[in-house]
Image (tube, rainbow, N blue to C red):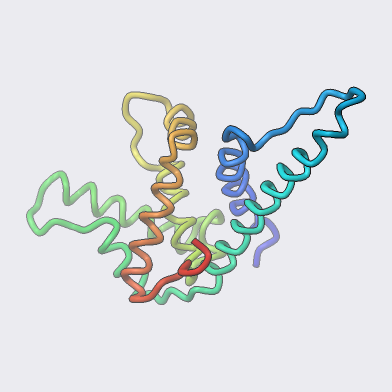
Length: 178
């Protein structure tokens, strides 16, 4: 693995975990007073939730990393994620461009290529494409990405990407971790 190959994982973890931890009930503030000891159990529970979120995420990443994806399976995933219409049209050009961008990232992009050949590489390719390269309309890229993070769009994308990968592999990846 390249020395900087952990950076994409850390960035992705920061985005998804930050969104999860920002949910109501995930943060505890205790004002120091003579009664503050009574709230320590609440703080311990909150810390356990944080650790459980981190542990669950790490287990999912591990399962994706342990999942092999051959070149043939990657091509089948691209067929599923960005099908190319038969007729020559704008839709066909858009699909071909999307596939080329994803394949370029899979093979050459430092944010994705360290995990090429694995399920995590598939997740990284799709997330990196959507987050950094997909066309954005009606907002800035930063606004669109922030909105997707807080509205659950990132999680929806991850679930759909995982579903498509499992369809292509003909087996579950996160069966007991999801």
